[in-house]
Image (cartoon, rainbow, N blue to C red):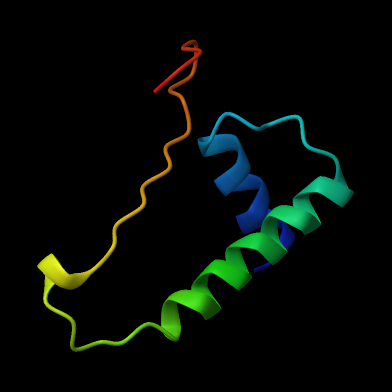
Amino acid sequence: MDKDRTQKVAADAGLGRLDDRHLTQLANGIASARELAGQLPKDLHWSEEIALTFRLPAPGRSKP
């Protein structure tokens, strides 16, 4: 993921003040999550899947 795209993702999540080091960590985390998601079986029924959901708080809110 290029730097501009990473900055947009961070800003959309309310993380507009990340420095370059943290943006790199974010990009690596996103790439890792995509890689792991790609390794999941594709033939599972939705009811067989474990769905852990993490949400970022909306801007101005402390908890989702």
